[in-house]
Image (cartoon, rainbow, N blue to C red; front, side, top):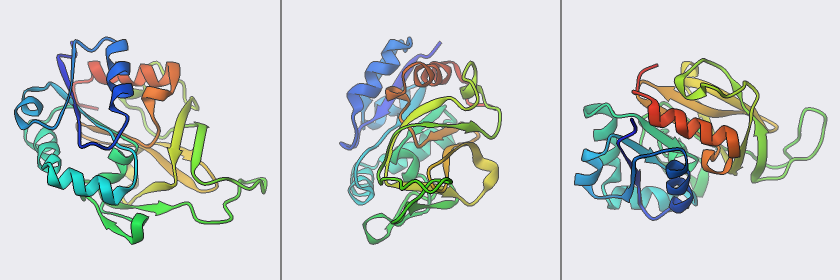
Length: 216
């Protein structure tokens, strides 16, 4: 049973799409909030995000969402799913906006794709990376249940995660460089792609999240 799913609202993200997708796959109750009491009472937490990391980090800290997220992860040990910029915010630092200090919950950095990005066969690749891409499952995980290795998910991003601890990488993609598409640690699962926009595979991942107890 999913219980209550709290989607952290710090004003940066298409929260309606995430909320609707969670309801579609069977969430009993979804609340979009940054209220401390509601987040403490929730059974699981989603940490989404889109936009510039500097603005995101400013709002996360202003609304104390960093503390609320830390409580959910480390004190209450709830299942937490981070999406897109929510994933990037977990790292130590991002190159975006001339360098921004992030939450430091996971070791590593967020890098820019750079200019003159090319595929392995020499095709010029546009930045941002926008559209469907295959995700290779680097490790088994409950959130991969009923999802084929190499399944395609929907991405929109100009910066990519480079985890320092390679043991955290459970999914990868290629876009001229190796992209850490999914990271996992204990009760945290983080994805660069948008499961709420990824049709069948994305909905299956969200369905798996609703039934995940936070262990691997």
